[in-house]
Image (tube, rainbow, N blue to C red; front, side, top):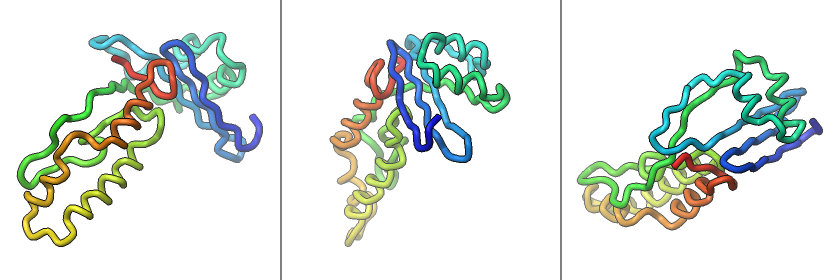
Length: 162
């Protein structure tokens, strides 16, 4: 893999990402959509993962082949809709608690920081916490909605298992 290489690979209901992280090492991830209600194994195993990406780009197959099985982490992730209304009284969720999304675009932390900035604006000069938080409780922010939409594009930049 060439220095600084990073690429996403998209297929029907599957995605794979590969990036050079320096010193001869690479980071990769793969996803496969599953129907809502289907349960997935938390530990797929290297052989099954290799089978899912058989026929994909040579570098994707090679990344899986050279990765020691004990270092592969498999998780089942599920997308879910944003909350339409969030929080009551002195409690208002922020970040993934308010607008969760799959990790495909890496926007979870960024949106949490944006939420914190908006929260700080609402708290500035506030004399009563519940009133200050009430301003955060409208419909989900447009930026969060657009990022979630992009993260959940079936077979696209992200992926939804719904």
